[in-house]
Image 1 (cartoon, helix red, strand yellow):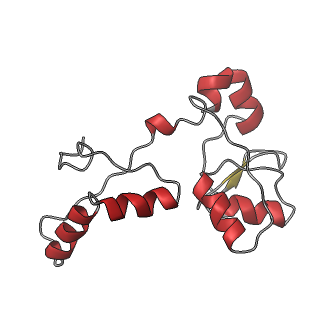
Image 2: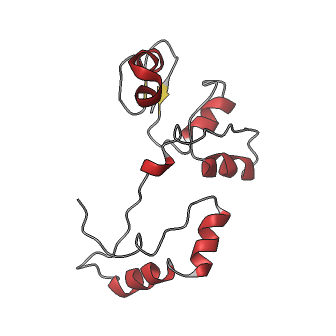
Image 3: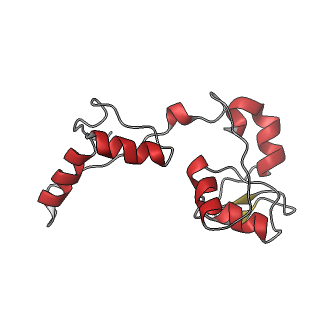
Length: 135
């Protein structure tokens, strides 16, 4: 994201050229998380980081668990939300295939879409819920 929208200079300034996980990019400036959705809030509260880029769901989770953190919305196209995809499917030879199929069917219901929307996830479209081969 930094390189796409801020250019290589911004990427180098923030990352020191590193693309690792669970490491310091240099001079305690940038921490690349391993469990990205939980580490930033803890590091901020522990005084080890000043800011972190996370999903809005993680800010809400931190607040629900009593952590005093706030968020700043990153607008499109800078947030790259249009490029984020999640995959879900039933394992062909899985031992709980019937449960997996039932869950996949449930995801298309209004109740499932409401549950996801309640937690700030964009509901999947019918086309997105149709089985397709992974590329």
